[in-house]
Every structure is written in C-alpha cells, then in structure tokens.
Length: 272
Image (tube, rainbow, N blue to C red):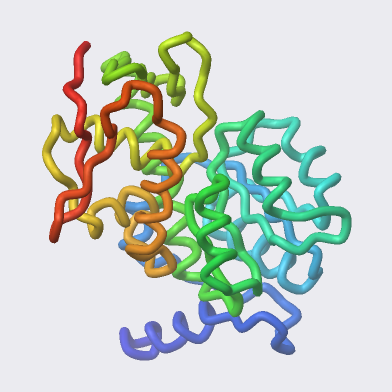
C-alpha cells in the first residue's frame, strides 16, 4: 500500500461517528508521532459508557493501542473497576444510575486517575463544570478516535510529569496565609486545614505560584488547564480565577492580581 492510500485508510478508520452503523472495532495503525506521546507499558483505562456500541468501539480501539482497558456501563461498574490501579478514565456524563459529574467528584476524592469526559452534552456550562470538577479534558460526541488517543497519552504523560517534578523537588511553597504542597497536591490554610480545590483550580494556582510573580497570559493558563485543547477558552480561565479568589481570602491582600492586557499573576511574595 502506498503512503497516500495508507493515510486515507487511517483517516477512515479513526473518524468514528457515534450513532453510526459501525458495529465492529476498526482496524487501526498507530501514527508514529503518537508512539512518542503514549506512555511506555500498558496504562489502565476505564471506559464508562452506557451505550454498548460506543463502549465496545472505545474498548477495542484503545486495547489495540496498548492500553489495558476495562468497560463499565454504569457508576456501580466503574466503582468496581476502580478497586484496581487506574491511570485514566473516559467518563460519560449521563449514566443510567447516576450523574457523571458527581461520579467524577467521587473519583477525585479516592483516586489520582486522570478523567476525560466523553459526552453528547456540549454546552459551555457543561464544559466549564466538567473541567472545574475534575476533568483533564472534555470531549463531545461524535468522537475522533485518533484525537482522543492523543489526548489520552498527553493526559497521562502530563500527570506523570507533574508528579515526578513534585516528588523530585518536594515542593511545599508558602505564600501569604497558605502553603501549596505540589507533592500531595494540597493547599493548606493558616490553620493547617486543607482548602478544597478542583483539579483545574489546583493546576492553575500551581502555575501562578511557580511563576515567581511573573504574569502569565490567559493563553498560557488555557494550556495549563486543558493541555491546549479547544474546549477550554479564556472564559474558563476567568471563571477558575474567580473561584480561586473566593477561596483564597483571609489576609486582606488580593492573592491573584489581574494584569491588564496580559492575564494574571500571584500578588503575594513566596517564601520557602
């Protein structure tokens, strides 16, 4: 097969439209660029999807691409699957026995697994809510499998990179009345009690703290929160900053300052 034919066949296999008449897992060929993005070894992935055709498609595709995949059709089955080590979860929002957003909160409290919402719900409110709660990405159906594979690999790699960096540096940084622990991914108040932050809020705050007072653009913060995916925009970043400002009160000094025409910066001096 020549290169052009091979590329055409690959695109045809990867662009799966949910609700189509396809009832078999497409035969796939992994893009060489994705081999570099994909973590070494077999990462464990749970596909939480009540539609059997979509679930079978995702399980088959990601199994072929070197993931150890478990399918779950409900919240209950997801909880059962989470008893074993899990690296990443594809999570539908509408499930027969519960709400995917609520399940994501539960997962975040008990697991370090990455979460990618895969759903038909495509409003801005749903996207922002999903990313604020716990999501690494928010993908709407119909699904492009190749794009989802790239996001999965990046999500796992990014999480591993953050964890390795925190473990290596043992970073606990004090600023104002708070201490952010990058190893434990915790924010502690002056009373020593943890401040509840969503995954996106923590990542954004960690970026601001690590910038040494330099302003960070909204575009950069979009990358921090979403790994350069289009579903997250400036409004998402502004909403996250507003939520952080409400949570970081007590010293009388604003913790996050707006830099006109640029973005945001940490307004308090750091101290180790």
